[in-house]
Length: 398
Image (cartoon, rainbow, N blue to C red; front, side, top):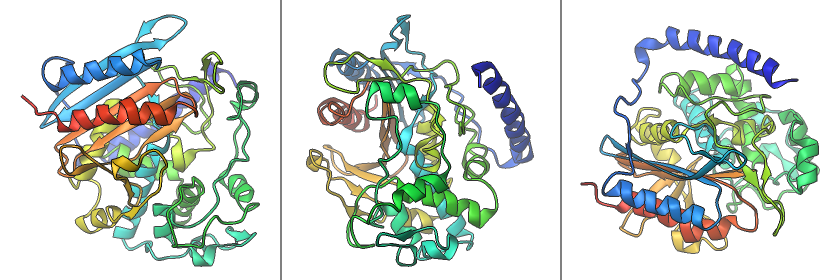
């Protein structure tokens, strides 16, 4: 399907979303009125310096936004597109990858708040016969364990497209149903027994998206729009479905599939396979607004917020010094100035999203970096991007 035809389909979805927004207008939260300061003074200057350091180390582009006590600062560095040298737009759209999981977790916890689902319900209760075979058993796995990555379910690496540049170009527009992805996962044994230890697996959130649909009778995408995007007025955030094109203005994404290879433009990519575990498209401003709303109690009751923040220790080699712990769709990271922040990182082929929000919701930062590779992400994270987030959240506001 051509980009023209897909954009026509997007228009139909936009009209439907506008109608939904009008129907729920009394409960809507007004978007931020004040524009951000572009790297001016204090925290803004530090943010800009750190963004420049990331591009100097080899990233293609960086876009960051810091919120502190109702003030906002942005920093931009590098380029939005290598071929044109276009500067990074302050309102660029970007794929947030696994930060999508926090949105999915909010929907599930809202359903729990409404009494429509229980965190101790088993997968088998809602999806009978789906998780079975090779030692996998949905009757032993709970919704809580899916949310917290303690289910022991295997990660799916069987979908083609991420191993090489040639493979990516051949499969970039492929689309598969959640049921297909689950069948692939069930070809592998569990990594651990349910509830015994934390191990990250996208399979957990594929299942959660299916459970949301089973509980509500509506798609996961519809529930995210109805429960989060519309009430929070996140007008630049969308669930793309099969649409492989980022809205403009956008950050082009670039991937190096092997050391020494050139950057490959991965901007056009069908992320339908990622759906509830990683498909959302947003902006730094909208994602910062989401983090702030979550901590200020605008999305969940105090009881479910407390459940979301019940953490278990994790073992991520190379990240030990950051004190990472995992909640229900949330990650806790320590700050050098004391305390810590809540977040969920996101990676897609060609871009990474980092940042988070302090527990009181008064300070948040979102950092989007384009140009990534499996062999460089950890070094960029620990040496540059996570320290950048730390300084942004610790720096005193004038």
